Length: 504
Image (cartoon, rainbow, N blue to C red; front, side, top):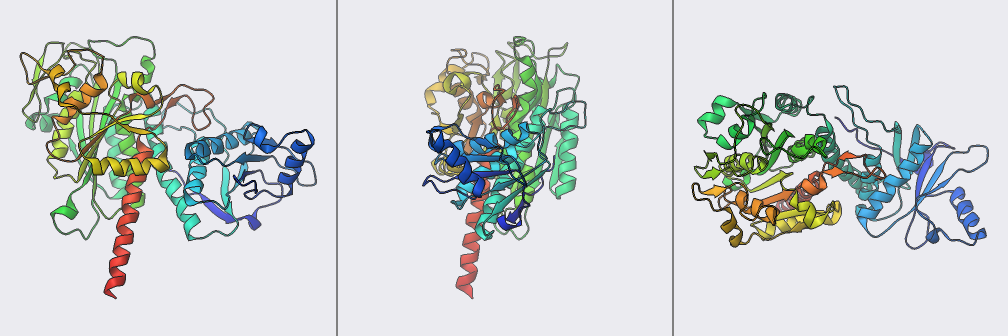
């Protein structure tokens, strides 16, 4: 899916009668509304109300020679609320089946502008596919954004929103694909096409390569499926890098289980359809690499996808099997539905061999994460305070609510096996399994900086009234890491510009 760059114009260029979205700033001044805004406020005042006392957004259908529906919305200090309200405003116009809309952006800080544009782009996005599946939402095809005086800073805010949306909406689309359409082979082909379109380097490890590398974690999980397994590496390598430190990549690792039946430890039928999104981690990484190609950072970024389907079958793994992973560590399989950590064991070991600047893995790993957070908040683990701080700073814009959880050594006690180095499922079962799963993964990253995002609880939107997306996959995790990479790129650019000035 390609997401066109948003069109920006001056407010003086808007055609009369064109449907619009406008914003009321916290100080009570309007953020771009014309006389119709004042008429709406007067109408509410005459009814004994103020715009502060009514739900937002407010739909106004004015009369006159050039009528057009008009949506008013109040700005909030919470960027998450801003994003959601902007989406609600667009939904109000979609309900009227309008084909065109201009968003009148207020004279506000760039973070507010970014949140508004992200909300609008998300609410107006509909899933499309080469297969028979289709999104059902009405899309406003002629959409643009207007400023009083478009300038460099405002344009940069809109561009940031486009970049983060490029990552998150592509991730959402990929995870929405039905499992019969997006098989491991098709996912591999998507990666090949992305490499061809962007000039990225690609390496695909197939069965002979996986066997030679000792990647029995990946091969064992895929053994019950009719589809092959792959480890795919996509690399963005900017020119001009010198020295080992500058060439060290940011490595993004995605758990890419295109469908997870649970294997012999079969899942309950209830909500098993959600398991097409068990590749939500891989989808987030794929979306991020599409964004990286547009961002063109001056540092290398490499994606690693462990791609499998987990099915019962005559050759499927069994509880009590013992395998040797690529790192040499042995694992006793207790639960075949704890397959994500098996494929990530090989993928993380592979990533650790790249001399990484940092390794970040994305995985719909544990149902127990829903018991910790409900559907809100990404359980995040890290062995490096500085890198988690970068992610946390990015989340001030992204509002995905990353929350750091502990990696206490005592969790390893629950992963001991009498016949292997580790067991893939904790002695205490689902109790604390988000924590014990992270402790398992940490055994395969060595001493490198590492972060793990458990996306299980946030990967699926169950609300039919959500203002930003339909029921289904969310693209969780992509926006916050996209923002982190944007922040790193802008920081590098500022430092380079400063050095160049000092040498003149």
